[in-house]
Image 1 (tube, rainbow, N blue to C red):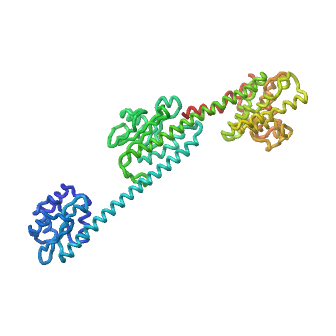
Image 2 (cartoon, rainbow, N blue to C red; image 1 turned 90 degrees about the vertical axis):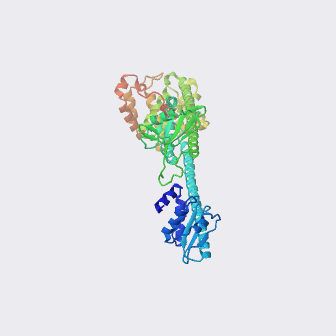
Image 3 (cartoon, rainbow, N blue to C red; image 1 turned 90 degrees about the horizontal axis):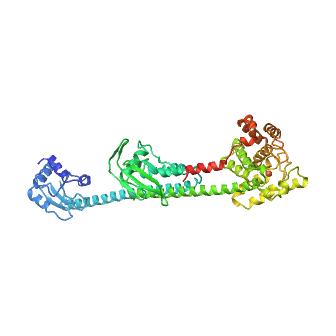
Length: 532
Ligand SMILES: [Fe+2]
């Protein structure tokens, strides 16, 4: 048998890369060619191999001793005057086992201890290598755990920002994006049940760049018969063909909100290569990935539920405000709808002034409440059919402060106080109750003052008809920087120009074109459409 045949034989015996490393290692330390033989190799093969390496003829009697070698210590036999045969059982040194043989010169004792020392050195270096690899893997796992924890913390932190209906879709997009990286998945999907999409507007989404479509992933989940009560799904090495390529592995967990199913979180195709510098230590999806998805699912469903509750709470709150403004307007049929119109026009003006959306909504809500103090004005004064006496006028003028005292007790309506208290102040300081002037009047009140005046002028009163629209616009324009904030008046002029006043004039005055309905309700409805 030649050398090639021996090598082939060794490969058949599954010689590991570890044993090849051992050969090389011992060769370097023994300063002599070296071979690692399996116990099954024939003595003739070994003799030929040694002859090839050293050019000496090895007596079969020496090889017989080698074959019966059982201890961990090396044995050394003198082959001739110049060469010794050194053999060691290396079964304990690495998994492949076998007899390590070499031939070189030197004293028997020296060579024996040299061989023992080399084997021990190799064993230690292998252990060292194994420890290093274990530490590296632990470090990688630790790094991944750290990233996962960071992400979950970020998820929890960011999710609380989505407290209105800008909602669940935005939240899902914002916080689920990094899942693909953390799962080492080619793509990640949020698959939402059709019923849930119809109910809340939350939509299915994909967060990676793969060619796989949401429909494809849905059909794969269907193939695995996954439903909301299912255990998490983990499949590796599945080779599922699809129109967009093969799905080799998949991990999926149900996302449930209470007893209700929202859908599934799905990762597909575990990457076998490092992603963005973080190596993959496990080429398959496993329990760690399921845990991560389950934690994400719990956070997602919990926050979605919170959004739902908050939207419901806001709707109830808004309903209460409308009931209060309805109670004010109901006392005087001539001013019916006045609070709503002032609120709505105030909102339109605030938007034209490019105030923030929350500021616009606060002005709207303050407009709803601006005259709530009229609840405390006697009917004889409030509903008087004719001009007011000075005393009666002073009584009426108390309504901003009465309204202030009502609202200040309602903690969550504090934002409306400036509008309620100061909507009758004038830019020139001649208003009431405090005679504030210019920018010392809160902006909310300056906006509502224009809206209030315009609706009052264009509404009928018991003692006068509604003023023609063009006259009301003219009065407000003329009062810029005198009675009203010129900037608000400028926005009012833009608004009235956009509203086609000619058309409105020919109908029933300002009521015809001040938008109907609550913008805040619209916001809440939008929230419901997007949220859960
Ligand atoms: Fe008022």
